[in-house]
Length: 79
Image (cartoon, rainbow, N blue to C red; front, side, top):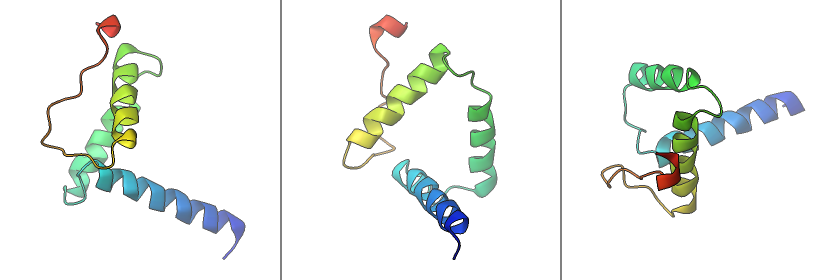
């Protein structure tokens, strides 16, 4: 396997892990793709981008993520 193919395979593996961590491993593929397309439309640096990034950082710090848990609130300074 070439270095480029290894890098691509690792990236796909990591992205799949993110889907699992978010509790979406059994979600419909069209739903997932639609959600990702919507995320791609969020402007980098916008309040929504910062809010979602904050939620993601907190989820990475957690040993696991319970999708049924209450929504993570952004800091009051972002409101």
